[in-house]
Image 1: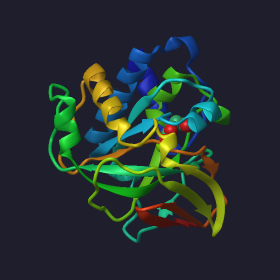
Image 2: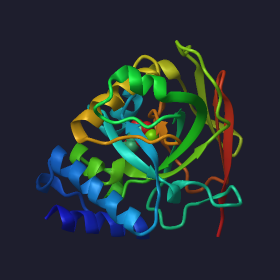
Image 3: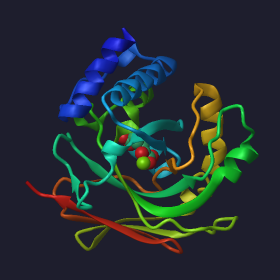
Length: 252
Ligand code: OOG
Ligand code: MG
């Protein structure tokens, strides 16, 4: 049964078609199993796993979507910009953009490794952009629904990787579409500080048994609510102390 749900979601993700929620057919454990089946299918079709993303690490996001638990999804190379650096929103349903912080893993880590090993494995940080797209009608879902739909993962763009020192200071976050500021926040909104996401990722990795490899990235979760992006030409995210990252949306 979970295989059928994975097929329906896989197709909806490929085509950018909206589907109804699964409701009581899913619980959280089944939903993570579905998400993993989608990952396996994507890998068998040639996509490469490039990292993980956390969702609902800020109150702004939890309040926007009406949920109250942290979630994790996966990232693949098909979610990166095209070779000309632009991003296509073809085959999306109702994409929204979020400002993100990305961490880079410089070593392989497994769920058997202690939190300190995971923390030591993170070598770089940068400002990032995430475009999410729920495959559910009206962008409305339950927690199991959104987990099964790979936490609405759709596209991501990373800026220039930088070295960093702990603790990470609270920093102002800005999201601009076509030169106009659409959302602002503070990195303290992300679990009190973005470094705290590493412990949460580690817990989820132990619970759902996944590893990260050297070169993988982690998106920490948005500090602001997500903004509809279909009409925009250009997105820019600035994070105080980390600089900015921008991307053009391909039209037509
Ligand atoms: C789920 C994805 C949440 C974040 O940064 O909190 C997320 C959604 O809101 O559709 O990526
Ligand atoms: Mg996000």
